[in-house]
Image 1 (cartoon, rainbow, N blue to C red):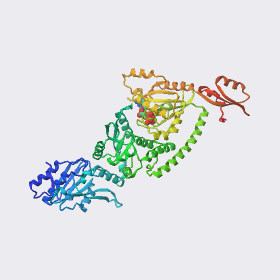
Image 2: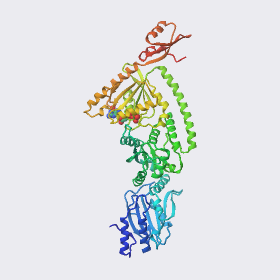
Image 3: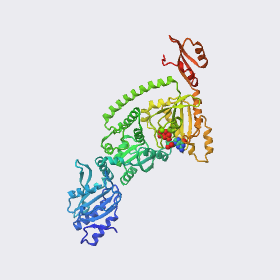
Image 4: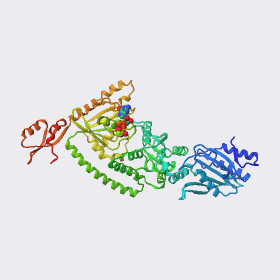
Length: 608
Ligand SMILES: Nc1nc2c(ncn2[C@@H]2O[C@H](COP(=O)(O)OP(=O)(O)OP(=O)(O)O)[C@@H](O)[C@H]2O)c(=O)[nH]1
Ligand SMILES: [Mg+2]
């Protein structure tokens, strides 16, 4: 039997028994206190004319029962008392004999010094214990002197206990506290995160919900979150207001309270209203898959243009989601989903966002015009171009590094690469090409991102050859390839030569020779291991063969003294036009790529 603490002197056995009964009672975790416990406390108080005090944890367990005034009883030593920016996870409920439920100065200072979740006082009506009234107070931040500020609420009648939803009250308090109370330290702690997925309707997706949820875990960890749990709900269709069912929302709110969760990420795009409703009901920050990917991109963007593009996508995503207090309250703390690509936090004012969107679009246009110039220069130089594409983490950067002796950032992490990187590639036939490594794709890539990156993507995909790197050691490699093809389609890439590179064959189990045979029989494909440098010669040969077939249009200026040269051009290529100019014959010719080098000295910049 648990002890009754405090001033128990002279109490009758039946009172002691009633006090002990309090330990047996449990409060539903979403309630401040159950009416049953409150009435029992009121009855005892009425009988002995002393304060009765209980401590509850967030699961609704009664941790200690004491008699006397609340301040003479110290909090039992409990594991998991939280540090700065956090409340203690314990609330104090006590009675006031004589009917007044207003909190005393001592009550409030106990609230401050122990950082209780909440302090409540029950004003006891001696005649009718079931007709008690109550007040409560919570900590809401710090004042300019570093003293905790508190907010009091009341007077309430017992019925109100049914309508107060405790997790909301506590998390609002904690969010406010997090802003003032050592914000720095809080942000260093990885955000404790839960992931939620809904399985509904026909599952025509290639990915199962579990697969997708697992990928979401990788994404969340890449963004710096600590994933505490994953939840999967099955339901005929999404709830229009909350996406998941209301019962599930309540379960999650409780879980979030009990496990001290900061962030909840949904595997699908939520409507702005759903996101807001969920934030209000869960009392924590709610993001969807899109926001998570945007956040990762924001962290990764290196170049000026990349940063602008990511910020544009983020702002376009945020604009319809700016609404009222609920959202801003849970976002005050910063962290995942609030970070922009620069040093600054994402803008959250609607009008400023609109202005900024217009401004960024202008900047992007400028940068891209400059790049277009570079590109047309490059095209004239007739160096064939090869782009590495593929699902994120397939090994594109690793391959670029081994093929070109570079050290581009490669990591076992989603979206390690964001900005395109270009290197010179020496082909076995002594020719050169340029090889571009680019951002990886993912299933359901946010459309805001595709839109913002469209021109960069188009440029990368405008290569003479696309090398599609596929991690065949991944159980979903086929589905991943499909996702890549879908993005290609969305960006309007058609009829490009694509070479499939089955990577990471070193990771395949020994008994998979049958599988390898199968892969090898796929047309236009090579099996390699970028990491173990297996199959690289074959790959290079395949690349150069494929580039040889390419026809390139060049403009050449042939001096009048070399009329034989002009004649040879008619044999080797297709002459598209010829103009007689002062310095010679200007000829537009379509040549095979591997012949171009021999004509290099006649190329001219002047196109028309
Ligand atoms: N075992 C094995 N691991 C590989 C191979 N190629 C790449 N990896 C590993 O796979 C992980 C991802 O490689 P990256 O080159 O960063 O992949 P990426 O396609 O550039 O990925 P993103 O830039 O994130 O889209 C790294 O840990 C590499 O070491 C391989 O052939 N075999
Ligand atoms: Mg990469």
